[in-house]
Amino acid sequence: MPVGALAVLAQRALDPGVHSALNPAGRQAQIVDQLWDAMYLVSVVVFVLVVAALLWAALRRRPPTEVADSPSRERSLRTS
Image (cartoon, rainbow, N blue to C red; front, side, top):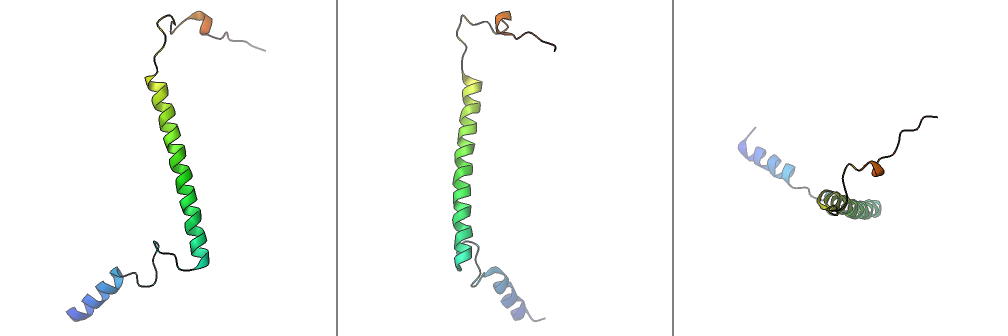
């Protein structure tokens, strides 16, 4: 195969032409694109809330009067 033909094939492989995942052309593709945007936004919000909750739990300080292993804070084991 000549080098020119390989160059044309390589260019065609790299050029998406009319098909592009970043530029939906049809109506159904636009609906799927909008759904993806909504799902991405919701997942970012959930991620930020979870990270904030983890940081709050890890970095909060106990009051100096609260004992970590106080028996009054422990539940007793009950059997039925």
